[in-house]
Amino acid sequence: MTAVDGVDGHNGATMRAVLTPTSKTEYDLPVSRVPRPEAAAGEVLVRVAAAGVNRADLMQCRGEHPPPVGATNVLGLECSGVVVATGAGVSPNRRGQAVCALIAGGGYAEFVAVPAGVVMELPEGMTFEEGAALPEAAATAWHNLFMRGRLQRGEKLLVHAGTSAVGAMAIQVAAAAGAHVSATARTEDGLDFCRARGAESAYLTGSHTDGADAWSATPAFDVVLDLLGGPYLSRNVAALRRRGRLVEVGLLSGRHGSVDVDDILRRDLTIVGSGLRALPPAEKVEIVAALRKHVLPLHERDALRLPIEAAYPLDSAAAAHARLEAGGSRGKVVLRIDTDGDARADQRKTTP
Image 1 (cartoon, rainbow, N blue to C red):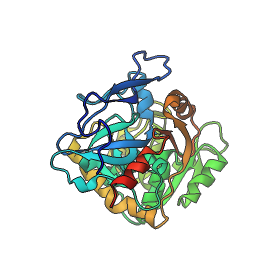
Image 2 (image 1 turned 135 degrees about the horizontal axis):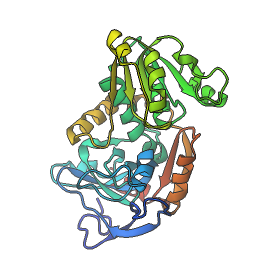
Image 3 (image 1 turned 30 degrees about the vertical axis):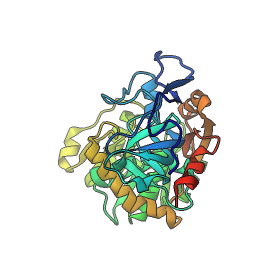
Image 4 (image 1 turned 135 degrees about the vertical axis):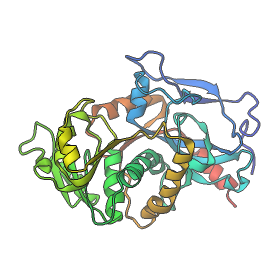
């Protein structure tokens, strides 16, 4: 490998990055110059090509979702790019790999140091933008459907907010695993979007639509994956079959709800919630290993489509946040970090 200037030895090198704003009300997310990281033991250094934008980033900007202790204050929970350096204990053969990664922070930058266990090599034909759209949505969907929700082949699943990045991913991976998937969306074209990704049925949801929430009329589902939050709690419980599982992963419609606890007891229901970012490193490595085995091959079989709603340059991070905040997206909002093609050049230069 020909070393990238300042990467292997650091030597005071800097990079462009977007930091968590100091104001928690209004912000413009300017690009700053910060020290370029190095790959520590067990890590790889990635030249970032693109980064996914997530609601957790928006919440962090508002002071509602602080990074874990010791994590960088550079925004960004997922990225794609090319490995340009490796730390002790990591094979140097990984240099030059096009990868994506699930990270605790640091994606809104030109370089990020990442534990090797949460890095995935991009399948043939996957773009950097698609790679940046994959880790958070795929990890959230897989962890909550199969590890927390215990979804089995042949069971009936309801996915709320099916047009979101997590919702679209959940529909596809669950359908590929043999589940019977239904989804909700707020518009008719949103229902079409869900069906195109494998939902067998789709329902309008929201008080502004006629006949909304028909999905909760009878207890029809074994698992409900909910990104909407508290106001839907009682209807989600009503939609579950005996011994059904409700998995709460989002608050798009609010934090607070109520439910008849006696109903939970009588029907032996399970309600769980989870957040991905604060999981112990070993659990994240386990999730990423499952993605390598079960999710990435779906892309190679053309059974996984990663819709990109919009892509912005790094210096338009605030616009990217505003687009996600506005709602109504059909897939992922991403940032293009490497606009000069350096990541692809590194891949060509270091790959035999």
